[in-house]
Length: 90
Image (cartoon, rainbow, N blue to C red; front, top):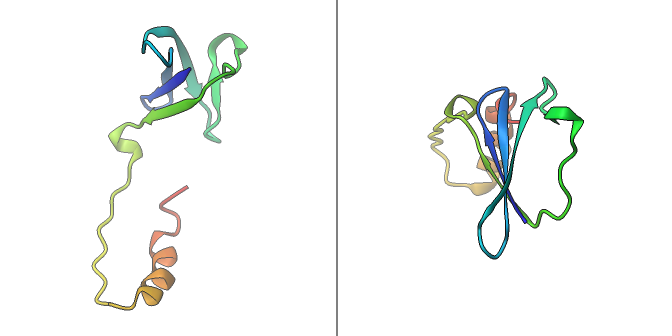
């Protein structure tokens, strides 16, 4: 079974598809708590047997940042990136 999480802010829907036929099996609404955990309506749990999953995030949940570093040494860039990205990524 394949799962597609369509997140639209603090809520979303989980679409479950059959592997072979790509037929939609079920659509399950969910909410997202402050700690980013998912709560399905009716206290349901994540279905078993999911082989592959995909996530669709809303644009406002994304954070894009372009860094232009005048460095050519990869080791120096790897040292700088954690400080530049601190607090911006989960």
